[in-house]
Length: 279
Ligand code: PAF
Image 1 (cartoon, helix red, strand yellow):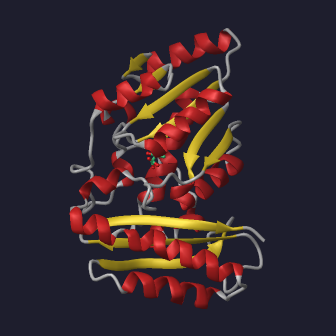
Image 2 (image 1 turned 45 degrees about the vertical axis):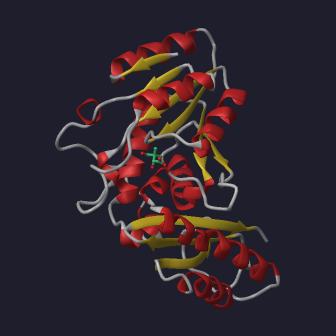
């Protein structure tokens, strides 16, 4: 497995692989890899000749008061995990290898304004910018993203369509701990009590799935889910919403495919979870 730090080195390797007729898969990450990332890398390994993992804590997707500095990092561990999973390359740039100042941004506005975009107004602009850059640097045939960040996945699909990237976007299922908590690098922020309290998210997901299958309107689904979260003293709801799966705009009933998504503070840690419902 090789490790590159610069755009130029990465492009040269990719050019050679392409000359050999090899297909390239990309798994974009911010590092501190867990089983959720591992599932993306495994799927990428099965479907491509070459597996590229990017490991970059992207500063442009963090707001001024968010956890950019505190975001967990452990490149040695990430590197061992990627090697064990058969990755061919980790691209691990420094911010100065990625961004000049000032630099261009990519923004997919409408879809970025609801759900997480309300509390994190610049987040998806940063995500779209870095993912576009990674797509241009690695020129993958396929790129892999987790369904846990469902709004991110929908925005990236729209960006690929709108900007004509010739890349197949592969969405992969949420990976959960045995007790239901969705895997996240931010779970490491939770202390013992918060870790227990965080289970209210997956319990709310389960309840929401039951109620929506019984044909309930959005308001009833969301009321049942919120009641579970509100019963947990350490939890504070940022949002619990039902939106159209493609446009990310609120809906009153699941008449088309929908996403039911939430963000909840457990202490100071903001966690997300969701489920999709297909009609
Ligand atoms: O999902 C993430 O980890 C990040 O948002 C991504 C896609 C790697 C962009 O920095």
